[in-house]
Image (cartoon, rainbow, N blue to C red):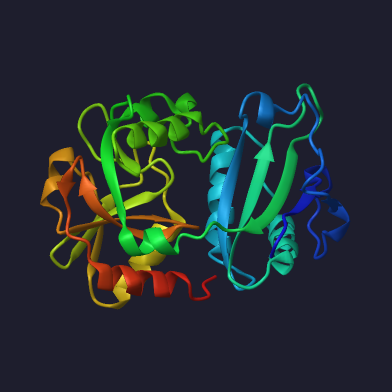
Length: 294
């Protein structure tokens, strides 16, 4: 795939259940203007999204991504996405992808200000080449996210558990990490617990036990993290969700950031303290994550 693909979706025509939603899709030129200046996704970041990894024209983990899109929509008081309509849109984008790795993005916004319906679209594009970072790993720093672990429950309007288009804070965290000489960051709650990375889930290894922060307190339940746990449990490892104190980071035998497009990347240092990178397991994880999965 050498160019982008874009498909606008009409959610207003998705109320009735049917088998074919092709007439609700409009192909658009991905290099041309397609959104109104009154579109709230660009004015306010008022919407939700998902990024789906594609390997050799096969979109990975489609159902978990659609479930998370619906979860984010509920948290943001957006209409429930019609999953069959979106599944068919993903299939159209999938068909436009070529060999190798691509990424499909699903976007659902509140639409034009004072408009009658949400705006929805799907795009596909070649993925960035992450082969080098998968091999060498990443150095990370810990950053205070500014909320305690109970903030999501106490203040649901913060939308901490939704994958929203408001990514300015996440991008600012990555810039701060680079200013500190690192590649990425791990968010900590203000009361000292491990959360997630700005664009990835965190998995820690303690002996033969693998742990990730429990998907509460505003942590996204990562689709790739679920796939990694499926692989590890199939090999007989213990996989768990826990409340992890920041002090536990220094005890980990190994650590990974995992996400849909970058896949599994070993953490080689946390706050300038070296972490042993399990390169063999990292290669095995990525081989699994690059295999077809529904």
